[in-house]
Image 1 (cartoon, helix red, strand yellow):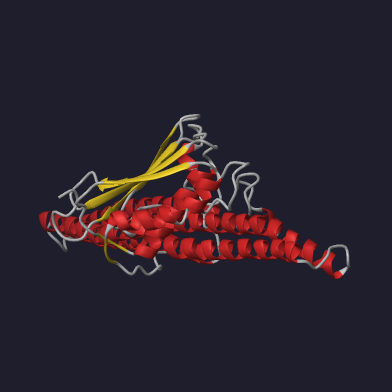
Image 2 (spheres, helix red, strand yellow):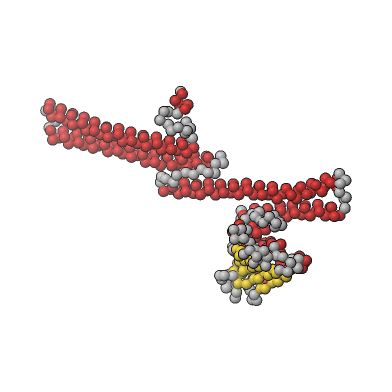
Length: 376
């Protein structure tokens, strides 16, 4: 009983007994190899003993004069060969069944561990070709689920962090007015309303990003003039640009074919890019929006360039990550992530070029409507 509780003397120190998880799989493999070796040894012993017994009986028959000598040899040899064939076939069938069943058992155990939330589980890709493909697909699925789980946790932590500041401001202002510390005037109520709008925008941004990442955001595509779409988006920021004394200009190529897009979502992309450009462009700087033919047939390209502070090379690959922003940057850090997902939903691409002190240019492409449509 004591040996069973703590493992047999030959079991490796520190390994749990009875084995679980990966240790259980290793134990099964060791046990399988041991059983196969014992089976081969018994099979060899049985063949030798059968052949010896057959020869002995045949020689006895010859000695007693019951069976002629040549015939006895043939009978003994045939019996030994038949017995060896039957034993070999049985051993082969058993090993084949074990070889097919063992990977399937490992796969079923892996599925059970994955269902319990162990996203780090992996199974060996062995056995029949079909089982190897299933094991490969299972490992890829487990890796994706693990990545999604890590992203979900990060998203919840980031959302909680972004909600904390506006909620604290709302709570402090409302409590101050109720306690008589603050006057219930338009200025104080305006500050409360502003923070409520920040919360509302954050909630809508998180919802849009979640729908876009899961490809469940519905697009209402229609043929839209790219130049008109750009002008409408820029017009909404002219007052803010004038207030910051930043020159805001557009330059769209003539004769562009209509773009087959959801105008509301593309305007949202442009708004996010323009808001970022204006936020990082100092007084006296410039922001320029251009549109023209894309790199390939059937696409339209739009770019937003500023003369702002630029982005450090080590930060450039991360600017499209959720909630990623510089310490002094306003906003929630979702604008570029949403822009990337919305462009991807349209079948386009987006990228950024920047250098510290030289400004930033963000360029994205959109599909045009009809053959031979962009740049025609």
